[in-house]
Image (tube, rainbow, N blue to C red):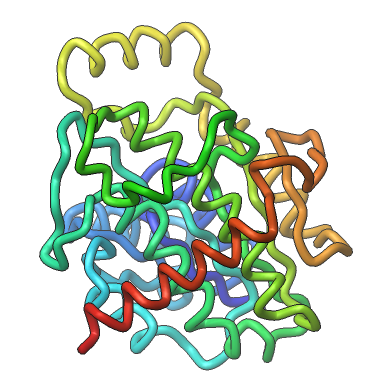
Length: 274
């Protein structure tokens, strides 16, 4: 029996993966911010006859304290860490830590959980981190404005989050070069989830229309992820767009930028934790 920790595990793809692996006989810890969604996840687990193997951790992953609360509540051995928590914001929102919300939730929580849970992953037989993002997004990393205080837009927030996660995958392997843990950056494409509900109008309506026309259902979207989890890649870092492997090359995966972002992120966490 494997142990899965899934952020964003009560909705969309995270929920789909969690319920799939409960059906397979594994243990799943779903992390989310909504008590109501957590209760629905546990009810669905009970319907599968897997109540004793499912748990819900309510946490605010937009704050460093909330991220560390998750670390304190998960087991000492983790086989798979799925990083799926994300939320679109139509306007710039600051967290309790004074951070731009997409930076905090979509990137910083993934950085902190990946590194802080590393030792627990390494104790597993075949450990893996699945970071569901948008790898290989074009454009440059805006180091001069990590908190997006100038010219904020939801699209820019999303693309900058994607670029940060690309560099996070690179820096993870830089920090842990001899790790048995495999790190996978995965782009699922357009998927029929509730992620766009937090968008402002008219973007929310447009997202619904596009979703009805082009979005893949969750069950179809997670199928290639399941294959990757069950047939773990050999390389330390791999990148996929749906089922297609992409090269870990080019500006999006620049090692110098990865190290720069890692150092700035570590300094930021240290300043918040003082």
